[in-house]
Image (cartoon, rainbow, N blue to C red; front, side):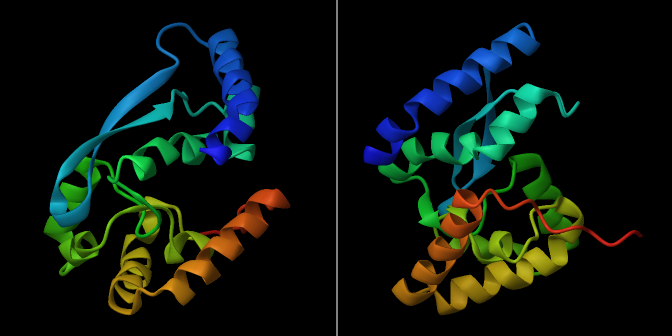
Length: 167
């Protein structure tokens, strides 16, 4: 609750910037697969992918992640675990990648082993799955602390995502 209260001004600024840059709802609802594949709805800031200053602000301060704290409090998510995939991506990845559903054996998290390794993109699905399965197999308080410490370091020092090699 302290984190939510502490970031309330950033939420409000993010909502205001979103309102100034686009019409319609400020937040969007998506369906994700959680623990044991159970579906749940998750709210995110509405972005259009144009890299507007509002979108950059939301990404810079990780406002979508802080919004997810409500789902941590509600028990649908954990602070650390495999990032939930949108239901449609998850269904496709389940068909294409063997053992993909094993990542649902642990509660999804705001941050995870794959994210601190710099793999947030769908294009890296196989490598992301390797990290997610490693986390599911070796989940521990120690690993959670390491992941949280790295995530906080990245968030506090506002490190940019690692550069991706050209294809």
